[in-house]
Amino acid sequence: MQRTTVARNEIGPLLDQLIVQLDAEGSATQKAYFNRIRRRLYRAQDELELATPILELSTTTVVGFHFSMDADALIARILEKAQQVSEELRPVAAKYH
Image 1 (cartoon, one colour):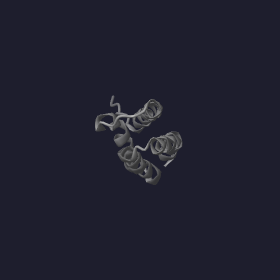
Image 2 (tube, helix red, strand yellow):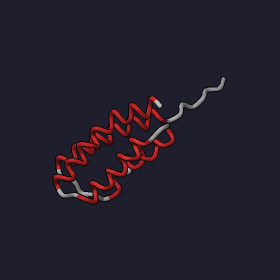
Image 3 (spheres, rainbow, N blue to C red):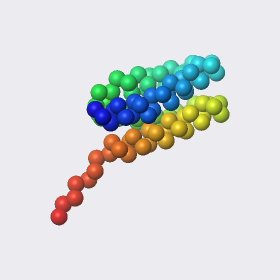
Image 4 (cartoon, rainbow, N blue to C red):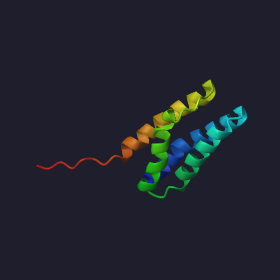
C-alpha cells in the first residue's frame, strides 16, 4: 500500500495540472484520456492495480497526441515519475548461491 500512496503523491498532482492545462487548451480527447488514467491511479489499492495506470502513462508517447509546449513539459515530468515508480515496482531477482 505504501508504494501506491507514494505513486499517487508523486504523479497525481502532475496529472491534475496536466488535465487543467489540457482543459484550458480545449483538448477534450487528451483530457479524457488522462482523466481515466488519473482515476485508475487514485483507485489503485495495491501494486497490481497500480501497474495499469503506470503502463498507460509509459505508453502515452505512442498514442499519437500532439501537445502544447506547456502540456509537453508536464508530460515529460509525469513520464519521468512514472519511470521511477515502475522501476520500484519491478521485483528484485532472487540470488541463489
